[in-house]
Image 1 (spheres, rainbow, N blue to C red):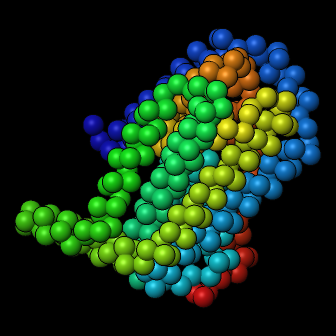
Image 2 (spheres, rainbow, N blue to C red; image 1 turned 90 degrees about the horizontal axis):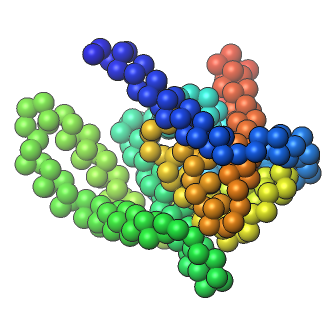
Length: 325
């Protein structure tokens, strides 16, 4: 099968997965009550949710800038904020989870003078975000347990968090050892691949050499996850869905982590299934899970349209691009 055909088949498979999951969930939901909740959305809470989402993107851009500075790459904060807005637009309107990352790499590769270095920074940014969301979910699940709220499946969150942290720490502490081990296989065509991989390891060594700044970036990642939880709390208030803070601190990060698995179109269906799974533990019905999940997704897509505007303005040369700073 040719590559275009393979890509089309994968997209079709993702659409099928999303459609099947949503069909099952909607068959168990009360759509009339869902429509009523959407009609009665509280605009003040909706505005608060959108404002918090904007704040989350600003903190994300700051964290990205900090990681770039560890690599001695200077990019203006305005440039990075623009890039994050455009990336958010592509993440929400392309059938892929990595479209936004491609934008971010393209926007910073010239500053870094290396596409590999720009990719490494975005990759570590992603990994720190994943560790942060799992850490928030794990901590919240522990607090919820002691508060008498028992959420199913949390052992998998703790297991994933432990495995990723161990792997990340090993890479940051022993990049030279990894380079020597993989260098044994760097012959022929693999030599070029290994050179790029070695550049990645060199960047990881620089990250490992500045633990304080790396910890600051991780604190920024935690802040991003907490802001996302607050976004969903505001959206829940807007839609009159009774979502406790501790439960939201578990459900939101886990749903975001599951969405990273490329088996659906932009997480649709998978995200709603995660919400329904955890809502059952709280005694809430599928209708509430669908209302909050789809309503929040709609708000995020609405906000991300601003990234589409930025993209068009940049393409037409109507938006000045910040220089290195």
